[in-house]
Amino acid sequence: MIPLKDDNPSGTVPVVNIFLIITNIAVFIYLNYLAPFTSHSIIIRLGFIPYELSHFTDIYPQNLVPIPMTIITAMFMHGGWLHLLSNMLYLWIFGDNIEDILGHVKYLFFYLICGISATLVHGFININSQIPTLGASGAIAGVLGAYMFLFPRSRIKTLIILFIFIQIIHIPAVIILGYWILIQILSGFAEYGSQAGGGIAWFAHIGGFVSGLILIIIMKRRKKVQYPKKRR
Image (cartoon, rainbow, N blue to C red; front, top):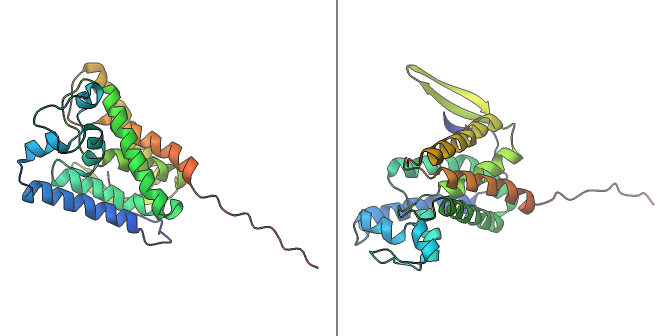
């Protein structure tokens, strides 16, 4: 299932969401085509490595930023065009409505906190891992969690590809996003139990999604109650 568009227009211009998308694309282009380092070196120097944080030890080659800052830098890095574009598609479809609810500044903090929480959950589960983690997936998972909570009945225009069967249908957000997080949970625990790594930080997605659910309840703006005017 590939989401294409939702039927939930935003009431404001999602300037922060657009800024995040442009920033992710710009960072990807710079690091992969313009930076004076090999892509492998960049991933190790700026990606999040659980072992480095848990042991506070910088694995060679030396990081370009302090170890705790790799939690942030890793959020704006991607492993390839497919990784980048799939993440940006989800952010484009679902992020504008969350920014509309929270406001621009709070949405930026929401996004960053979800990403940080997702990375820390992944680091805790894989405390001795020396494999770099990168991507905006954890932060975007927080956006998905918030969207499912706020707009469960919004209909998502979705491309379904099943062998030779290709069709576009409209699916409620609660179903498509509920299915998405279910896959993350099942895959995460199956991989954790077998101790076999598949290259996807499932628990980062789970951590980000749960963070988004919690944060949206805490941070969303309350609607002002309008009381009827008294006649004099």
